[in-house]
Length: 125
Image 1 (cartoon, one colour):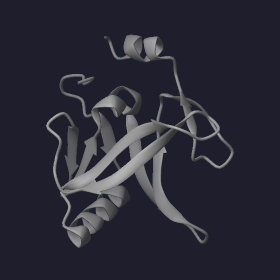
Image 2: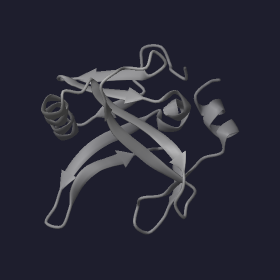
Image 3: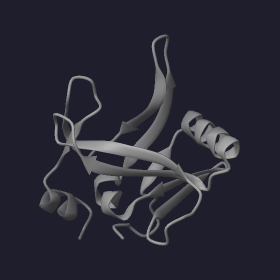
Image 4: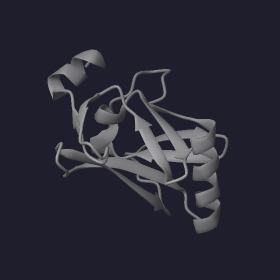
């Protein structure tokens, strides 16, 4: 939907690809669908779910056996994002390094994106 020919919508770190692939195999899923929804103190939140069917409107990014599906309404907001997976003493989980985020809450769970017109202009639309 909001793609640039020859450029992947998101990139996936090796550690994230390994974790996605591991969970796909464990759950027998077709991939990890990521999206966004309204919520949190900054206005928006990422959504993630392992799915058994690919929506034909999803943007599909594959790397080393890992498949990330980007929900249609999230494609513009996630373009250029690096998906990583980090493990520390206190927590482990996916991290989104998204150049389209202009603000985030203190806990990092809620985000605010650039204005939609600014996003479209940056993506040449």
